[in-house]
Image (cartoon, rainbow over all chains, first blue to last red; front, side, top):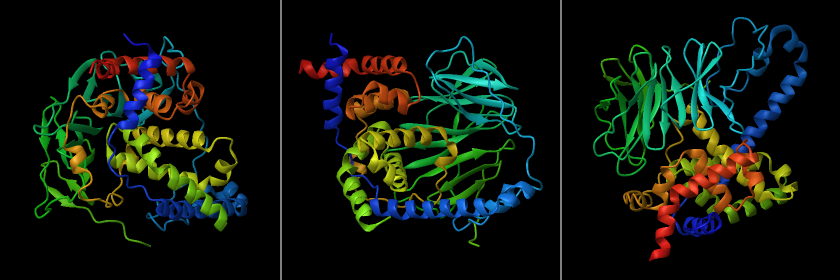
Length: 264
Length: 167
């Protein structure tokens, strides 16, 4: 038996000895992106300062709009939101001292939330917290019917009315990630093969069985870029991307590319 | 940013990149792409806040905290995984050799099996050598949680760490 100090020192040595592949982070890209963000922030501050009267009269969105040099502008809401007040959410009892509570997902109707207290997944329905018995780890998404998708290390699980379904692994793939769940209990995500960037888009049916999504004809090889399903609607429509191209799969599973945003 | 200030930033980042990358790689349980993303996010935010960071008593502590926040945010926000255009900087040949070895007994594989926040505690405490109070602050939890997570994490790795000594 070794005490924690000895183990900690040993762990430090082992961590320093791990063979790390060359990193791809780039200081010049950081400078360019950092400048861009700072400029944008400065622009917003100026606009906000100049627009105090406008803010008071017409709402913030009109002032905050002129920034779409990277993403298309989101249309402003018909009228400024008024009367929005934050409501504290109760944490589950018994309180788990010192464990921060985090929210990570909300159902399409905005009634059900999912999150964690420490590594205990929690679901809120109309503000009422409930710890999810039988699962640990992190809640990832919650469906309109209250089913929660989560992950615990290598395990992917779906919690529905107290029943836990563990999602099947894709044969020949060593890792799987679930990103979204719909009201039918279908889960969208990806499985990773020999290398971590060699991923294939998959969905899981409600019984936990895994299915590969059809790749578009002529997609070719990824060249190190991943393919994955990222979200799934209640009718089974899936969106994701294949080798950098945004993709939509029909509920029947037919893939088709999505047009990218046009620059304004 | 003035040229000399920027030079100080470049010097700092260039010197620390390998260490930051190692920490990120272990935080991400061996996912080199995600590690690159959180290092890139960290050094970009560092550029934005360089004046404040450079004034702090301990820049490393400041940066390690940003790194762990980038990791936690990355995990929390599914939306942040939607990067349709960013994933193009492949470096052919460098990942395959490392990643094809799926050695279930390696330290990286063992770390990958731990809950992400427990992994963050171990990396911050032991690799980055940050005091318990700083780890608690960075992970927005109590000192007691850091201590219990750290000892649970070490317990999980005990088998493989102790094995080294037997050889």
